[in-house]
Length: 380
Ligand SMILES: Nc1ncnc2c1ncn2[C@@H]1O[C@H](COP(=O)(O)OP(=O)(O)OP(=O)(O)O)[C@@H](O)[C@H]1O
Ligand SMILES: [Mg+2]
Image 1 (spheres, rainbow, N blue to C red):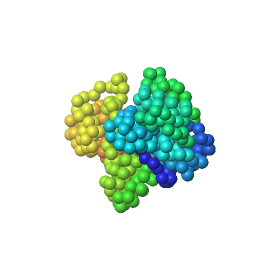
Image 2: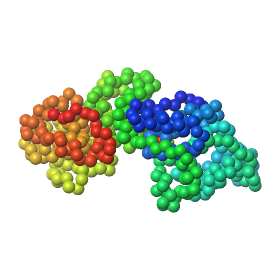
Image 3: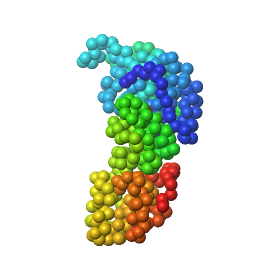
Image 4: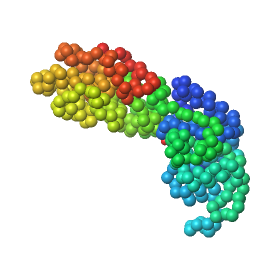
């Protein structure tokens, strides 16, 4: 649990999604109603909860955050409601709960979807009466005036259907509902966010801030970001710690950003054409071990130990995961940015330059659902 000072919290982004979230925050801040915030991990649910509090009439009161995940029931109940002396081993004195510590403030219950069935009943009782009964007390101790904001990355209606979450509690919590979309649905915010956090961490670690090359930016824009903004923040910090020099290139980015989505086979779909063990080995070396196309494929092909069909297949495998983008393919196969022309020249010369258009329709990490297209230059 944490009690936050009224510290500066910011929700960065210029996308329509972020503008709508900011408008919803203001709307929620004007009302005193309970708010339920949902969304994938790392999308900014806690940031939103803090902003609602800080922009509300309760801003002068405290914001207390309690994470419901990972605490055994008895501890969570005691954290929230407090206990009386002697109510359990180790309860040496009366202790107030966190709900009492935020009079006229806000209590943010994070990961509320993880609450046990018993704790859900305890919370429901509190929501119905507003009364606090400390553990071990035989009657209610006091009433409190707090606003409740809850968050979860679970799909609560699904959890209700599965019998894991109480419907009556859901209706109590779900007064104002805010759903925060994942970062890949507002990919246009990535450059701003990345720039912000890169600057922050470079300053913090006292390293030179690199300029972000177009190819590196393309990789950032093409990635799915399953961990959302938290993941982006971590990537920025790793890069700052690596002190990459003046220019940030794709090769400086963590390898998972350059590879197909986790769990996805190197070759998408069961209908993918089969290929030789040699092709498999070569693509593995480039995709998994960071070796360059120039050292893995080029010399073998030039020595005529790799067929033209195999070279085409290698290009095809790469294009499948870059959505047909040749610039990204250069990065994917661990070549420096400047080699783009040389690489295309080589493929054209040997008649292995495949039209990129057909790969644009393959559902890949870049183009699932209504995810915006990566705004990159059309490949040669
Ligand atoms: N729009 C944003 N602008 C700047 N930073 C953001 C934004 N959204 C999130 N962050 C940052 O990303 C990180 C994750 O945000 P937060 O903790 O609010 O996510 P969450 O949705 O609560 O995640 P989880 O479900 O894992 O608890 C934090 O460091 C936060 O500061
Ligand atoms: Mg959170």
